[in-house]
Amino acid sequence: MGKTTKEANSFVSRKQIILSFLKEADYVSCKEIQDYCDVSGVTIRRDFAALEKEGLLIRTHGGAKKRKSIDYLFSYDDRIKLNKEKKEYIGRVASSLIKPHDIIFIDCGSTVSFLTKHIVKINPLTVITNSLPIVSELIGFENIKIILIGGEIDNKRKAVHGYSAIQNISQYHATKAFIGADAISLSNGLTSLNERIASVTLKMAENSDQVFLLCDSTKIETDSLVKFAPLSIVSMVVTDKDVNQNTVSRYHDRGIPIITESKH
Image (cartoon, rainbow, N blue to C red; front, side):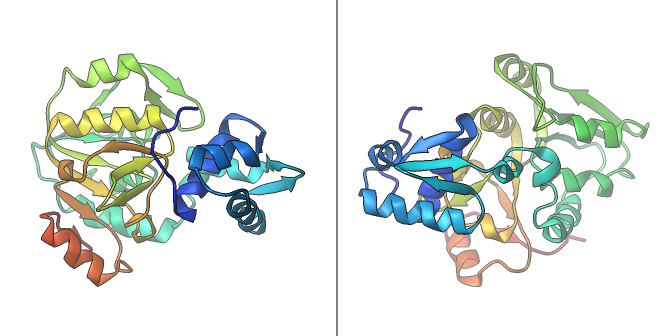
């Protein structure tokens, strides 16, 4: 795995890196993470201990091995259960931003998937997506034209990704894109644990007039492993009411509104 940042100097950043290593292999050594993050062995051992307490790994001599419980970080079925009430609320708020005749991209983020149940009465509407669950939920509504992006299927994420998907997205232009991210911060923009899925999300954003990031408040002012889009690509952040008001002000000062209530 190549190093994507010069230094991962926060526990949140190192946590994402450790879990990403464990996604690709069942074991990671302390030295691997120490070298990758450019921090001391004492720091990494402390990180391992904290993650073991969270039930995300098992410490071993000189490293750590994966617990099966971390698979929820990468599986659609498990991710959709996390912070479900907040995601339901965000989906309802975001739906107020969609109007008849809109052409919208919807990516495969678990938060974004809660948007679909609130848009089924919008007539007419065109939805372009790489998410198989979203297609399944909307396919029975004649007022909604569905365009499924073609490409390689990620079985766990139940989504289409890869070079063919990005090329396919390039053929379309949308009025609005509704996207997700594993984290967003003023310093690093949008970041993700999954580079392949994130590249599809970025292409959707680039091919849209407006971009709405849907994420619960726990993801705001945090960082994940891969930087995939600048903050400037986002037109608006839609989140829950637990977001820190000082954070709302700081984003507003950067020209990015954060909304927590329906527009109608």
